[in-house]
Each structure stands twice: as C-alpha cells, then as structure tokens.
Length: 95
Image: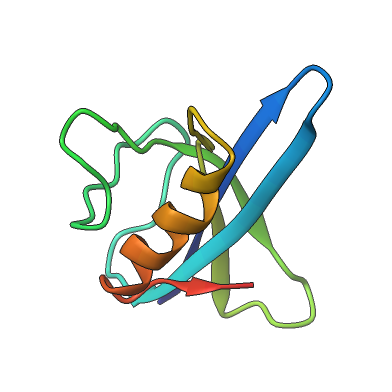
C-alpha cells in the first residue's frame, strides 16, 4: 500500500512569529501504519524520534495513507531551510 509521510519543520518565537515548512516522502509498505509507531528514516538524527501522530485516508483516493509525523522544532529561524535541504538529500520533498 502507498504511504505518504509528512513532517512539519518549524521555528516559533515571540516577536518573530512562525516560520515552517512541510516535507514529505512516499513509500510502499506492507504494514498498516498505527498511531504512536516510531518511523526510522535516515533523514532524521538518532536522537530525533519520529512518531506517527495522525493517519488520514482520502475517501476519493482510498489507496494511500497520509501519515503525519510529530513536528520538528528548530532552535533558530535559519535552521528551517537548513533542515529542509538536509532531508531533501534523503529523498524527502518540500510541499
């Protein structure tokens, strides 16, 4: 079955507002995704545990699970773009 993993990379601070970018990667899995499961992908560091937070099925498509992972908060605003570039090298795309 088709799986689309998505993850929001963001920075937020009082007075600076919110800066974010959504990234995604498509997979073919034999397993059905479940809430709370940890997904290991080479794009994310070892100490950055990625867990499934939500699963959506579009009724019109029906053949793909849209799986949202926990968001990634970064420490400085420029790290949003830096992380997007890093994960692109691991097969992720930016929306």
